[in-house]
Length: 142
Image (tube, rainbow, N blue to C red; front, side):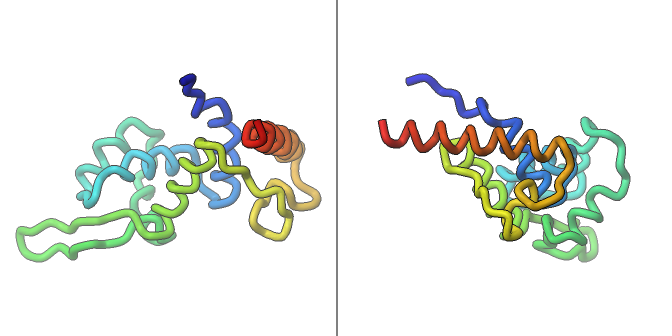
């Protein structure tokens, strides 16, 4: 069987970044941490060192609810963190999209790319999403 999960990765990535207001670096680190049950700031920093420098990234992800505290720091015991339920649902939806789930074409707030008066790049991705969804529907019929 031919695997082409990443055929529409660019489209799915653009959609997720637009919908959840994430930067590429934020998305990359959340995908890295997805397989970690719990992690310390050191584990976060390990992957973060590969990304564009942003010393407030961890605090921003914590404040925005993508990362939550699992265990507070106490004495010599370091704090541990985990991805929030919201974050895990978002990443699960990425995998579903890559496995053939359609992206919403609704402009009622579920997909900001389909809103009225969007920028030119959003219109280009909107057309690609429509095309991608059409291909997915045709594959399901076959």
